Length: 436
Ligand code: AMP
Ligand code: ZN
Image (cartoon, rainbow, N blue to C red; front, side):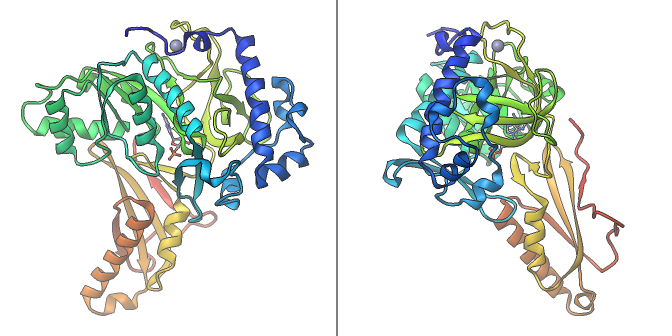
């Protein structure tokens, strides 16, 4: 199959047709949402008592926003809209406070999600016949399984390697002649340096494309990846609350990411006022999920910053395009693709009695990968005792952090007064990574 589209009718539908689909979709979502304890109350407060109270896309602003805190405060079942026996999949992510968020899927939800991922894959020009090595983490994180199901639907040969073990990844790329890989941009850079060190370089590889996502990266990073491997790299955007990958994806022209608007309603708002902003103006991305019954999500504030373009795309698709994500409205850090809030680190270290009052984290690049260093002041009495006690404490802090944030940090212990003291707001994060 060499078709350019997965679902031509929908991908190239006129704008008024797309809006019609969105209104129909949102009416269904409102019906589902009214069945949940959380939205049951929240929508009624905004005087939305039935799908009939929503009739055109302009009515969207009548609906309230949903935030990550709403998801946390209603953990675990406050947004569940179906009987638990209908749920076939759970994805979950940890957060600032230790209370996770959870997303439930019915079988139909998984099928609809896989369908838009399949559509995304076809838009890049990858297809059945490609050997797809998925280097994104499999598990509660959506990056691995999300692409996996879409790729199988397309008919690609999927190799579910998951992340890490770089030498093995390279061997598998050679053994199975992988043509498409999916990874974070930082991991691809690391992968390249391992390939370089391991001898014959790119000889013996069959790579032609890569999907990159899960973390911010610049156009220059994309170009570098393309040049290093001699392949095409396509930006992929998604977040676990909105299913995961497949929310927006670049087409063959690699000029911003098409948001699949029959599946997601996208808005850009001024994060301070909540007012909608026109195309071309940067603001916070707000998304409504139209394809998931088990956990409806309406006007979700992603905290990602970007802008939209509704200029026609050369590929013929009519769905609006989202720019690269330029930043976030909160202090969430993305370290090698993993989301970390400084408050998670604080919570862990401050539970340890030997820890003093000041701490700071540093982010640097170690080759292509991000490196996290946690500097912690400890009470001076610790320094007067046995040095092995300090080493034990350091290992304990390191281990507790690793278990909580799933990243292996470097931990450095210091005497009180070592770290800078801020007058005002403490500067907890020194981010030395090059700006995108
Ligand atoms: P998660 O819920 O763990 O999948 O993380 C989602 C977050 O990762 C998003 O809200 C973004 O901040 C970030 N992210 C995902 N994809 C991209 C991308 N292509 N470019 C920049 N940031 C991304
Ligand atoms: Zn396009």
